[in-house]
Length: 107
Image 1: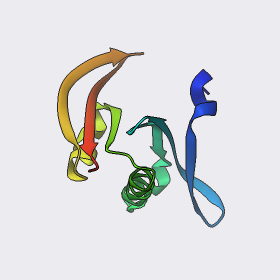
Image 2: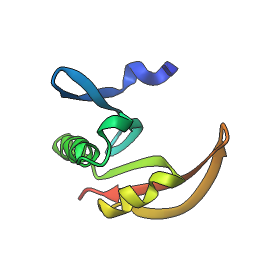
Image 3: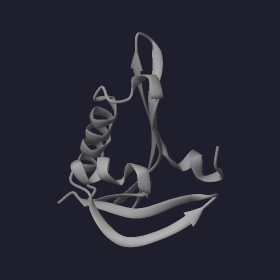
Image 4: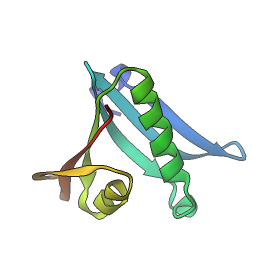
């Protein structure tokens, strides 16, 4: 849990009443950042991540968002590129993980 979590909108995906995916969305004017997007490893490669990503993308658009972005772990960047995100060319390391900032224009 992070201090600013109370400012986020939190989504979960369930299968047979079991939580299988989570994500937190944070709005700053018309920019939406998502964090802590995770799908249970037992449920990966079944389209759940893609469905959740589409759901919160649609939510951001309905809320007037013009940009969706995240600090993506390098091993997940290809997933986001496949879904219309673009490279920002900015990289950093945090807690031993390499990240790239990626974004998707919404309007």
